Image 1 (cartoon, rainbow, N blue to C red):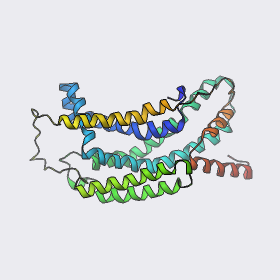
Image 2 (image 1 turned 90 degrees about the horizontal axis):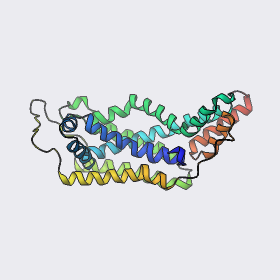
Image 3 (image 1 turned 135 degrees about the vertical axis):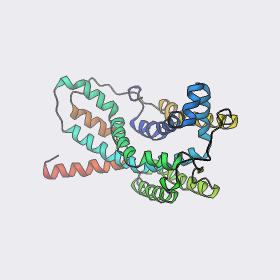
Image 4 (image 1 turned 90 degrees about the vertical axis):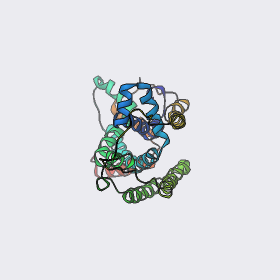
Length: 287
């Protein structure tokens, strides 16, 4: 995407924070659940239909809440890490043999930072919030699940923190407000509809009928439509909005690379951290 001129911001938001998590949800459904794996092994097409149908039930709405919570926490973290990377790249001077690394870093710094942050958050809360709350095994004991009240409070607080960090970004303020309000609306829908928690079935009473189709055609078509929507937002739209990629021939050092990356920064947190690091460097002369 980067090599064809898709902007770093569109890669980070459209693909990284919207499409990629949904793709992860689909892999969880087809590989991480007994039903999905059984169907995929017996008939791959049925496995795919079942997986897409999961986009049309309560587990996907709960999943959206978890990845919004993840975005509220990890996007500011990514912005800070990105500022640190850009600042240090500007101060590095490596010989020309590392020119290939220059190009790689330029095109992938956002993805590299986002990947590192993703590993951190996966280990600390995102994986647990999904498999222990959004779509736990129906036979998982209630005391082993994450409390819905905990998810509600953490998501609400993280959303307000996220919004406060981006409140001065006038050009995209409406988007940040809309996303934050959406998380409150989704939590309200889940609570009012009684689908805040996954159904619990005691292990001795749970028995899956392997001859019964575990999805309806209506759910499959609805889920397929939802997938196309996220595919458009995360893949097609960024390509439609791509810009002419910069030429790399005149970039002779990582220092120039850092300056180029700085020009592309749109995130207010990244800009704020860069300004603070610049001031510290001017005052102390130290990185």
